[in-house]
Each structure stands twice: as structure tokens, then as C-alpha cells.
Length: 145
Image (cartoon, rainbow, N blue to C red; front, side, top):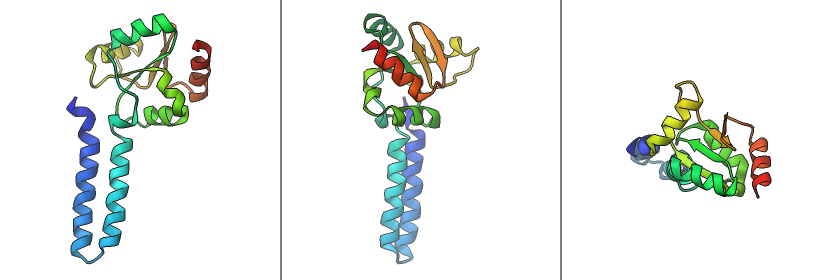
């Protein structure tokens, strides 16, 4: 669980140190802007930018019932973030599993990717797709609706 927050916390700490240096140097406006940029970067790279993560078994069960895709992701992954941003509000219609919080999710991803934890891995109808095109994922969501 803590591994998912390492990058966001480091970003906030680095931004705070740089902002403190700028304030000490007499540039409070620049310091505030820099700190804001670092806080926004931290928010985007945190688990908060993604829908609530559920367990791997629960996601697979729900997907079998409603046909929606399951996305295995981790915070700090630029490809996961790209998928999340490009899907927009339709991302909430999928089942999201954070492999850093759910060990069973990491095991599913490793079994689908030859031992690697390559994310995002999207499972549609029991078939894994590694780093799929967001438009293709959007079509799969529309099919399940």
C-alpha cells in the first residue's frame, strides 16, 4: 500500500524544499506556483486519480456478471495514466485493480505477461490485452453496456 504513495510524497517533498528555497530567496510568488505544479504532479501520479481499486477476484466476478473490462494498473505508470485520462468519465464503468495494493492482481498480470508486471493490462472476456489503445478499450466498454 505504501509503495503506491512513494512518488507522490517525494514530489510534494521536493516541491516543498524548492519552494522554501525560493521563499528564502525572496520569490514567494514563484515558490507558490512551483509548489502548486509539484502538488498537481503528485495528485496525477497518486492512486487518487484512478477509480477505487477492488480485489482481483472481485473484479473478475463482477466482470463475469456485467461483461465490463478489468484494468490492472499501478500508480506512477505513465501508460496507466494515459489510459485513464483518455477514457475520461467512461473509465468509471470498468473494474480497476491496483497491482501494488492487491497481490492477487499482480499475480494475474504476471501470469498474463510471462512473469512481467506490465501494466495497464486490460482483461476483456477472460483475455488479457497489454497496454491497449484507449479507443479500443472505449469500444469494449460500449459493447458491455
